[in-house]
Image 1 (cartoon, rainbow, N blue to C red):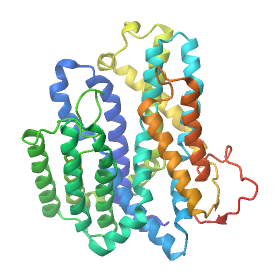
Image 2: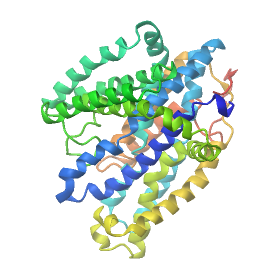
Image 3: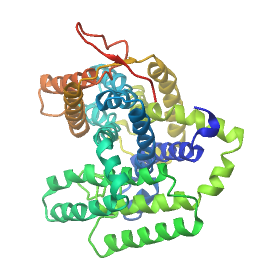
Image 4: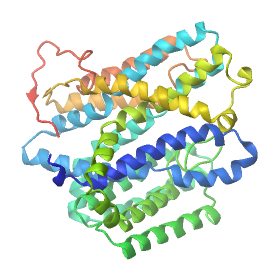
Length: 426
């Protein structure tokens, strides 16, 4: 695609979102353990929770991709496999590396509790992949609804989101699971308007949307009883991310309004070749950095522990990062090394002949989502769970990825009788 045909502003939003996610997660190790400051640090999550921008931009990209696929007369099963390749293939090296690191860290003498927490924290980014894949699967349906009913589709999602929140606030936490689809789906749906150019540059219009959504968000928090935090800082503390809530949707609308308000000025800045090179370079590393930035933290922590250089090593906690800025610099160096190695894995050629079976695609999606849900909730080394069960769930994930042709090329092999059709890349 030629550079002048790209939505340069969307590229910038993705790069900005990446930086905020990484910095937010790294700072989370500080704020989550500074108990006296938790009251005000919860408000910082409104700045660092930028996943809604990912989903909005993703909606625009998926609308364009699905439209091109239809123009080629391509089957949905082939289209979803190509999207799954780009989304899931980088996950396999992360899982495999940590399956090797778990016994190594134990042999090096790290406490079992630390290893368990590390094996869970390292795969935290997987939840995003699962939620995003679940939303992408429905793109043909939601795009058709968008073409027919427009903004009413988004409005129709608000009521069931609020009802699910009501059940969650009354103690039925499982009722919020439906909001993984509804909240992220609504933000993804708004991305269709970005694709259609309805969300044009408008300082007044964008600011009005942002202020209205922010006002609604403040009402939900101060009057509606919604928690302040927009990320999972403490597993036992209420938040608006797990499960997603109406408050998170309002935060997403606030961010989208700001994106509209600043679109003209930032698009003009993006015309500079230097800006395009920087943003383009970051964009090519987005998935790699996102998947590996937590591993960088954990490897530095493990190294510091085993070398005896970590202050009060037996009492590892996030507050140590606040007083040791050099640790953050070291994390960045380790992350750069991980990106250098594993970005090359992503650059390996993937299968161009994708299986057209709809049934096999549905099976692959189901198995992949089950596997991602398991490792996202329990990690790769769950306490009190037999190893065979944990490895079995990883096998379920890999089986789903294999069915979707989304395993790395060195691990994916064409099975006998696997009749496939060639499919162009998007």
